[in-house]
Image (cartoon, rainbow, N blue to C red; front, side, top):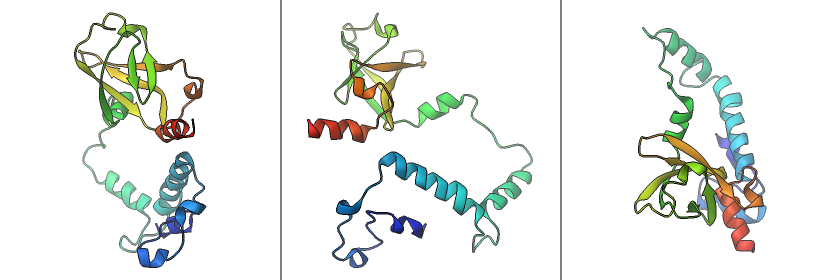
Length: 170
């Protein structure tokens, strides 16, 4: 993955190689652009390039490994639940106006019976790449997505980095 050092804003592999280069002055990719670039490098280039230790492409090695399994590889029964299981967690109290996280307010009518009455801090999961909604876990373990309220800047997906950047600029 040496190609990452070709990107603007690279910090290089060591302080010596970096020298007087100032990466913060030339960095120009957003987090979303970097994620896309990295995904294309891994799925599009790396997996389809012959690996020196494998003597074949990683994609071919994977297919051979799957073919040798006595049973098919297991898949998550619930893809959304699988996604939610890996999201970061914060704990918040449900207040009258709903949930407040990263200076944003989130609401769904499912919160109504607990709004302003809850004394416990509830599990809230969020995707740092999309703060237009968060996920509240109820006492039965079900997740409900809560929409960001009264904030036009998060009506579309926005990242946690963008939220903090806007706060610094304002």
